[in-house]
Image 1 (tube, rainbow, N blue to C red):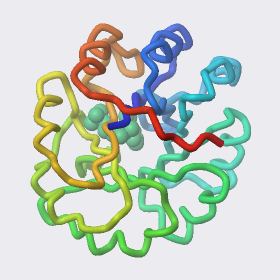
Image 2 (cartoon, rainbow, N blue to C red):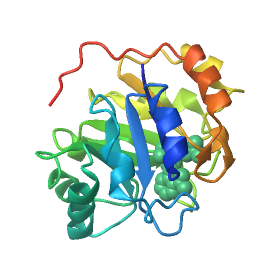
Image 3 (tube, rainbow, N blue to C red):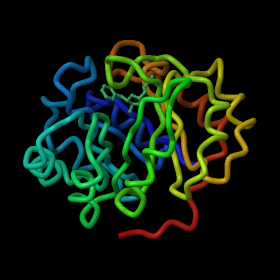
Image 4 (cartoon, protein in one colour):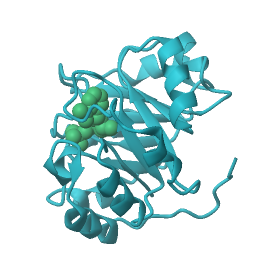
Length: 213
Ligand SMILES: O=C(O)c1ccccc1N[C@@H]1O[C@H](COP(=O)(O)O)[C@@H](O)[C@H]1O
């Protein structure tokens, strides 16, 4: 199980999270998010260990802007959280890991994901809301039983200390990681390190057998 901590924007807080050794750290470049990281100095990210996959999070952003921010912050992954098409996401595949996010509700059709196979590294299943992400709401995880593709996925959406023990019930072979965000904050973008420490001790993170680039 991999751990991604998302929505970071304060340098001291970033350093404290780095010390916990998550596999991924996420920085949100969506202007409507209270976790918008647009003011972050590139130096704050340059110091992060190369073992941690720095991830830029975007919502229906222009490809040129994503590429410019990948250059500026040296992102090793992009998380595309809007309505990005298979052709659009494929553009980044040779350069960085691609996490394609989908908002899931009771009617979610996993068939539509077929067109993304081979073009993404991971899916990320979040709760469907108008805000695109960061809702703090969970979805019905039983729906994941309908997912039959072989692309590994992250679970996100309202993960918290109150429900993390329940992830052990998800026995799906493609369940790859969890994304921790708004339920681990004292303010938007400011993570609660004590809460994160508790989460890390609950989740058995496995950072072994990684292919490093
Ligand atoms: O966190 C945000 O503000 C955000 C805004 C726009 C797109 C994605 C965003 N965050 C992602 O949302 C999910 C779920 O977060 P939460 O646990 O429900 O707060 C997570 O994958 C974040 O990466």
